[in-house]
Amino acid sequence: MTDELQKWEYRVQTVGAFWSGVKADELEILLNEWGEEGWEVVSTHILENANKINVIAKRSLTRETIRRRSMPMYK
Image 1 (cartoon, rainbow, N blue to C red):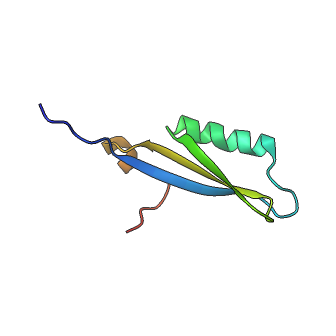
Image 2 (tube, helix red, strand yellow):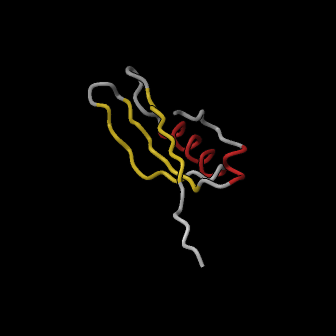
């Protein structure tokens, strides 16, 4: 029996705008879309003096998610 390490892919998106900040309803829509795609938010980071946040999510990397990646691969 071999123990294979769990593999993850990560996604980071900046949400909000300088003048309007982060709107809860828009954030909720985004998070629901990500949830349907299998993403789980693991952290947020406030961008000071910008009224924005970075939302960081991960999902299990499988053959299926590799085929339907919603974010570009970086090397």
